[in-house]
Length: 212
Image 1: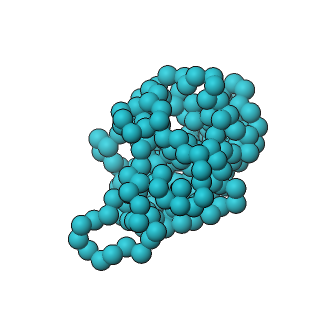
Image 2 (image 1 turned 90 degrees about the horizontal axis):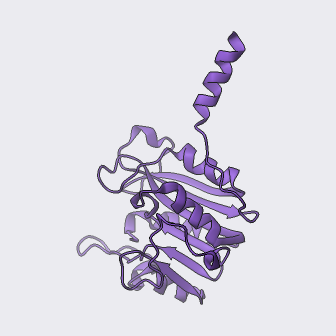
Image 3 (image 1 turned 180 degrees about the vertical axis):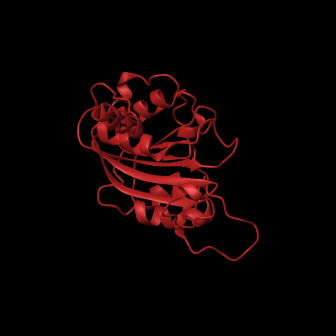
């Protein structure tokens, strides 16, 4: 869901060079939510009921939504399972605003997303890295997400952390309900998906063996 507190990040991400490229796949049907009370929020997002409408207004012509439960979606795949091969490398942009954490099989879901983007395309991910008790099935260590992109042929082009209320955070570890925003550009076709390893264990045991 698009909320006022987070619009500043969309305003930074969507103008990135080459980011919005048809066809666009939106993972999770993204309604725009505007509080009924409080001051008006100055953003073009709130002229539209959903992200699809806003993207159409920006000249994006082919927009596909994927949501396992929402009947408005064009695709209703269960992202715990591999997507059909005809979806591989089909999309120029994939936008995930808070869906990855709701899918139990993170590995399959993330691999699906990576495979659905064509080489040269981009993926935007917004996901919790601290707090958010019972919000989804997972809260992620950013190292795992960022490393997964890097070792599977993606360049990280944008990283931010914020509090739920939109405040920018340099270190999300000291705050509850913290979010990672990341945009990654696919540099090559994905062959075998490589799972990341947690760096601290590799370093720890390397140091142990070196001291013997």
